[in-house]
Length: 280
Image (tube, rainbow, N blue to C red):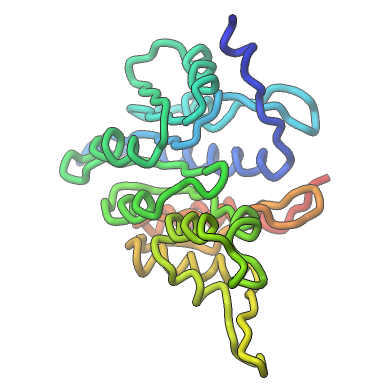
């Protein structure tokens, strides 16, 4: 059976298309800048930890549109290597069919957490004059803080990160934190890295009875932005852009993190283009 035909492609809405455009625009600028380095040539790579089958279906038009891996592969000047990961076997096989047999493209099937640590990040070491653009776009709360912190500590990676606040609210950040189950707490601890999210997400101030009250999504996202700087070690983390659903509710925040002011400046410019737009 044809692997591509067997895959149920994701239908994506306006804001998912915006995300793809943001990443594509920055990836093009990133590759152009690094390809122009002649005094100290740098081997720059593209990393996609939740790559999917390579293409999606637009809800607006019903047409197939390239996913993030294909957008990256079509950038000119090109990245030197590509590391593409997905846990879904059918999506990986479809991606292999679409991409073809290219020696500079490495495709892995499995949990991205050990794959990134063991097989991908060792190829982006500072001492080897390597640099990388990494897209971490988890489907749910299935990304470990160890990945984020390692990317910051390496000093070689620019990162786009999906901060899945709607899934957090559904599983972990309940209005009554006492009712959250062990599984929800464990997932939040794994993504955040420890239990300090409780202090960011809840407050007992101005409550006469001392009950914990949940803070708003923007406050939680700002707490995580500070954590990317203070704990993960990224020097440049601009305010994220909220990504919404058809009801204009924030589904996730798209973060960008880097060590370079010029990178942050480029992304701020791109974010500002879309920040206040609304889906048609």
